[in-house]
Image (cartoon, rainbow, N blue to C red; front, side, top):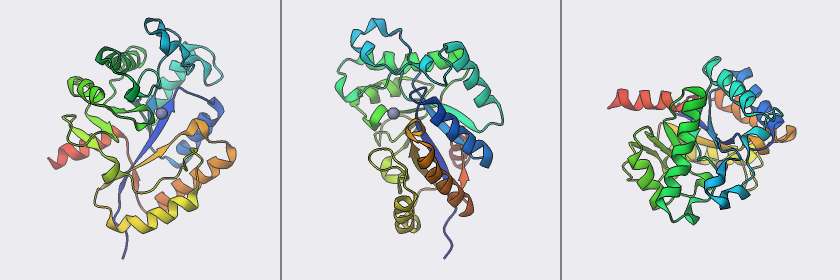
Length: 250
Ligand SMILES: [Zn+2]
């Protein structure tokens, strides 16, 4: 029996963080195949002054892409999301914090809203989705997202929250390409995929990636993954395509 065709949402975490060459390589792999990918951005820069504990977080936008300059980073990103329509940004929090360790709603709101507003200011883009750093969700996070009208999708979120669309781990995560060290392993993916694809009910599958951590060897595994999924006849979609599809069904 032929597998049902799925819509694949590539959930690429930590855009704006880490090794620029690795990100560029991943982006080129997608462009070469015309594959759409959703980039979860941490837009935080060194202006975390309001929260001294956040100063310890050294994930600085200006350190990536070898550009060492916020303006160049935003220019690169603007061109990326405008050219060819292959990429969409989603909110991965201003800083990459474990929200389960934050007990203050004001800080939770600030981390989410500041990221939202920075991207809006720099790129004129309203992000429609949120995904938690480390996928560590909390009740305060739920409260914050439910009050934020912009956010329509919560990736790997808490089921039954009032965020319009929660793409839960249970429904959408059938096979991981990365092991627990974020190292891609296509054989591991293929095994889980083969076992579960026929029992998966959702039309949408999420595959989580951390491109900043993929060296040139592990990028080959990503290429195998994307080629396999294309060969299987699945379609890669952006989160805005997801919203269009689910609204059309409603
Ligand atoms: Zn992350």
